[in-house]
Amino acid sequence: MTFRRPVALMLFSLLLASPISGCLGAEEEIQEEEVEFLLLADEMRRGEFHDFIISGETKLTVPPTVLLFIEEKLQVSGTIQAEGEDLQGSLLIPPTTMNFSLELNSQILDYETVEGTPIVSGKEWFEKMEFITSVCSDSSACGGYVNRWMGSPNPNFERAASYFQGHFEGLGYETHLMRVSDHLNPTQPESLNVIAWKRGIRDDCVQGMGSHMDIAPPGGPPGGGTYEGAYDNTAGTVSMMLFARALVDIELECDTFLGLWSSEEEGLRGSNAFANNDCSYCLPTDKELRFYINMDMMGISWPAYKENGDPFPYHAWSGPDNDPEVVEQAITAVMDTVHFDILQAPRNLTADNGYGAGCDQHWDEHSSLTLDVHEDTFGRSDHVTFRNKGAQTIFHLGAYDEDYSAYHSPTDTLDNMVEVVGGQENLENSLEFVMWAAFIELLIADRTPEVRNVG
Image (cartoon, rainbow, N blue to C red; front, side):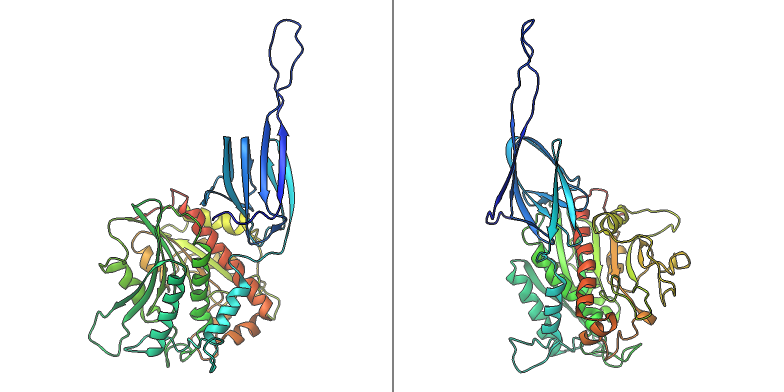
């Protein structure tokens, strides 16, 4: 991220004393060396970047709850050493970090945080959801991008895809509309994806995030189809729009795609078209596919609570999971660190009444675990496309089946989501948590060499 205006300077000078040897009887002298840490901020605002400069012989260490960037690159170790030269960097304070301490050589600097404007915001998510799902005569106030089921053709889907494409292009991404008609049956949907590319430092690897933008068509099981598809999956679609903006000024190691898939409801046809066709903006065959993070049906999840007092389930599942007795993938450790060390989620929060649906291999042991964060074989969404190609994957998912019976039905609306979780603020908080989890997972996995193709 580029340096922004200096609001105020917090300058710390350390005097490092060292003895100088001389002739017999000479008194010990003190050599002073100035070490500087300039923080270009007047206060620590949660969810925002804060720029700094360090100089001199300075070692800066941040705690796990703060992300350290040097020249727009994440430093996973949380430590940087200046060797006399000026180093420019930034601290990113997650919304869950209330206070923290920085270690500057041997000095401890304590900070308390204040509420900020998060770069990935639940409030902004809600505003975009309202715009996309609301229908009115004023197109500047209501987008009305509803009825996004795939068909041959569906002008509502075409119009929405153009809107999403414009969002990515406006942020400067190399963006493509990908259309694939791989059959002659007019009753089966074709594929129409929006693909945005962010080029990385290296040219030998690729990775991505994605969400399906299509919704269950009329008559579709189990609820008869929907027109807003607020939870499934306008929620995930909007999260990708927010990720795109937050990533603009961050350097990534590998080429990274942000995908909005079509025809997920008809068998992952859109993501499969991207992964298995040969085009200039399709998934490349000459680069290592390292990982993929999937956003599908989120927000009806912890930290929101049900009417009976139980927290809604929060699922984050990594894979592949070939042996249920062994943690196999490096991205699982990334996922665990993000949720419990960085975002400080409660590891052992349970629900007295259990859940109506869960994971494949570990359900017996996790049936009451609220934050269900582990490796698993669970499928049913677009991460399967990339897992089948050897990528390490993470799938974010909230309540489903019996815990949110409105999905795939006309009642899957933004208003219903608000009602189910007990208010707009609760929904915004739930979405903000899962979006930050996915966002930080991407940043750390990108800088973790062990997260790589297992095929």
